[in-house]
Length: 283
Image 1 (cartoon, rainbow, N blue to C red):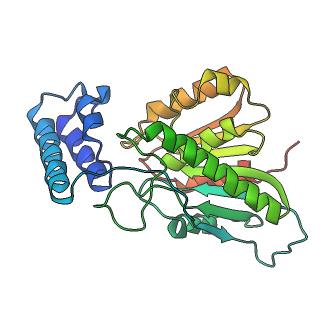
Image 2 (cartoon, rainbow, N blue to C red):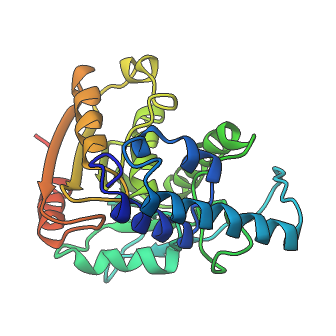
């Protein structure tokens, strides 16, 4: 809504994002997407309220610092009915969005008509702030001096998890299936670890060109990508999906793009198209 100049709606969705855990007020104050509404009373009042609220919470809890260390993380595993450990199965790696958790995202498998694959949902490594609901996680660490390091750490962690699953089970091919932050990371994994992932299905995501670079994309071979995005998405703008498709196609990557009427969600009808694409036999 910031790009459209609708100050009241921009403020409303900014407040929703803040309540969901996005509290990088520096980004909010400088994001060019809000240039058209910055200075308007309806938007400024919300932004000032958010900045003041965060300042109050930091005064109560003290300064937060981030340190990297070893830890164990969950990976929710769902196996086909009558699973045979001697048989080969496709692996689908589910990457959840900001504020989600593996035990919730793994339920996405119930939408599949054909469930003859292994579904693995790793937990994102970051719990972004003390004020968020417990057991809710993020793949990114925006607004800190650890942001770049966290991106690399999370990608390495996902790759290590997938390799461990490959060692334990007979895997025929591997797909990253992500939503929102998880969609962004699905593309990151497909590009940076293209020898580990065969396909990527991304709902409601984007490509950050500072993370997925032209140099990375030039190295990619035999990766197939399915991108789906709501035309009315107010969390991750639709234009981000259009840009992602253009960038991937520029480098000769096979992309199927499906848009739908709706917002920031995994649309059921579009999901059925993704399933048909995802579980089809390769020529």
